[in-house]
Length: 213
Image (cartoon, rainbow, N blue to C red; front, side, top):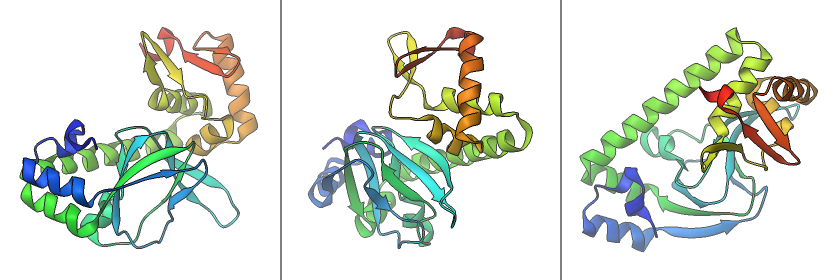
C-alpha cells in the first residue's frame, strides 16, 4: 500500500498507518466500471492508485456534466464520511484502474487520531470549493473557447517540459466539462491548433507555452 506517500495520510502514527493497511481493500475495476452512484449511501473512502476516473452528474435525458478528472493519488468519498449524506455524484473508471478503499469507521478513527490529517482534508475541501467556484464563473462569464482552454489546463499532465492532454479524454468529455456540444469543442480545437495554443499529433495533444504562460 502507499498511504505514507499521500499527503492526507503522511502524519499518521505508525500504528494508525498499520491499522489502515489491515482494513484497506484494494480492487481493480475495468474501464467504464461505476464505483459510486449519485444518491448511494456513502460508506467508503476511495483512493485512486493507478488509472483514471471521472466524477460526473447525469441528467434524466442522459446528458453528462463532468465535475472532475481523477488521477493517481486523488481521492473521493470523503464528504459522505463527514456529513453522513448520500453520495453527491457518480464516479466511473475511464480505464482499467486500481483503487484502495477504507470503511467509514476506520476513516473517521484516522481523522480523530490525526488533527493534521483533519486539517489537510479541510484544505482539500477548500481547494475543491474554489475550483467549483471557478467552474461556475467560467460557465457564466466565459465564452466556449476560454472554457475549453481552462479545462485543458486543468487536466493536462506534465511530461518532461511539456503538458499533455490524456489521450483517454475525448472531445465529448471536454464538452461535458464546459457545457458545450461536442461539435463546438471540435471547432474550438481547430481554432486553438491554428492559433498555436495546442499541437495535435494523432491522438496526442500538447499544450504549448502560449497556453500556460
